[in-house]
Picture 1 (spheres, one colour):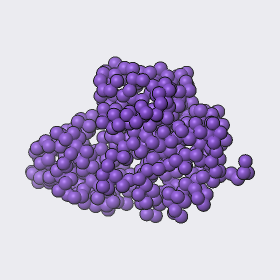
Picture 2 (spheres, helix red, strand yellow):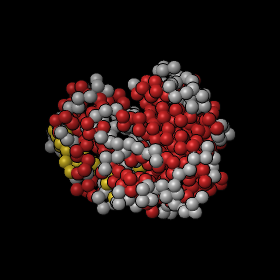
Picture 3 (cartoon, helix red, strand yellow):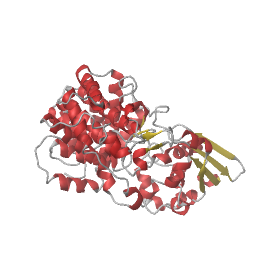
Picture 4 (cartoon, helix red, strand yellow):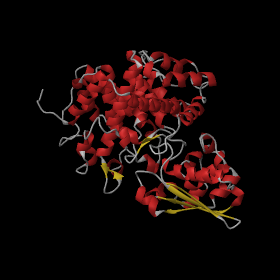
Length: 476
């Protein structure tokens, strides 16, 4: 022992206390909603070709039957299952988001915890506690790399995928809570994972599918780091804040490592996590909300002369430029990053909670009525939206109608966020729509029920068994 204490030791002390004493019911409720939402998104992702890719690889890693991978009928080693499910959780861009760090914490932490909890035959309350703590650690790492003056993630500014980088450490802490529960092992797992953390966002710029597996890799790293810690491997106590540590490596001199432990246990950054109601880029969501409200007021596509979509200035390059491409997206995937298309789809009348995956197929983006309306949408920087960003991702939509009237809707807080959370009914609808892509309605309802009662479950394995064996299609 070096006698030196670092930030990871304080994190580990808090995590041990949570593992041994348990968290309040309110925190477990937040974790339950995160598990329900993430499992639904994982199921939806299992219909994507990326599942074939990751299963082809994990099949070469060994076959110890420990944990469930959605879309596969046989169990696999827990680290492999975490990799598969973590990939599925993020591949549809439908996973939850923390603001202002713009992290997707559940996409790595939930799959990691599910995998080790199933292998260990853990009870539900301990699974939820580990999920809550791992998610909080992930977010706090992201907030330590958030530049308040620039209002931007330092990780992103340097071309790094903060979700996977921070997710590896958060997943390791959570997995070690399950596998051991003592502070020494948790600290070792977190510091080991700091050496495994990785992820670039160059694919956002020039293409490639590697970003889809990065949260899966983070979950895999988290489980592996925890297993190594249990086996006796250790890491430096200053792995996070040290001269050659996590923050210096990823963020240079700009990070604020003290945020990792500031008011830890008293303030929960996880309360600022937003559940996505729509399967598209989060910058498009407020515009969708505004279009839904216009439709509620009676505005119909045939009434529209022109639409103005005002958003935060930094958002324009993602959802508004180049204007011609955004007005007529070439593919369903491109449409998910188009302000004009998503407003038009919602005003025309989309599926799910407003728009759904059926609105983002290659066929759907060729609908003449939607494209005609999207061509009438002009995007601009709105000063108020720019001021609020990125604590919220707001929009202001102004519809100029053929009869001379003007209808305006300002959505300054995001649906699914702490100010406008999805109701239990809305979250259940999202889960059902996602899960019924693989399971029948009865099985979907049973899975939802079992996840909702995790707080009472003495063993999580029956719930995971449902995910593995009851399916109506897909890979088997």
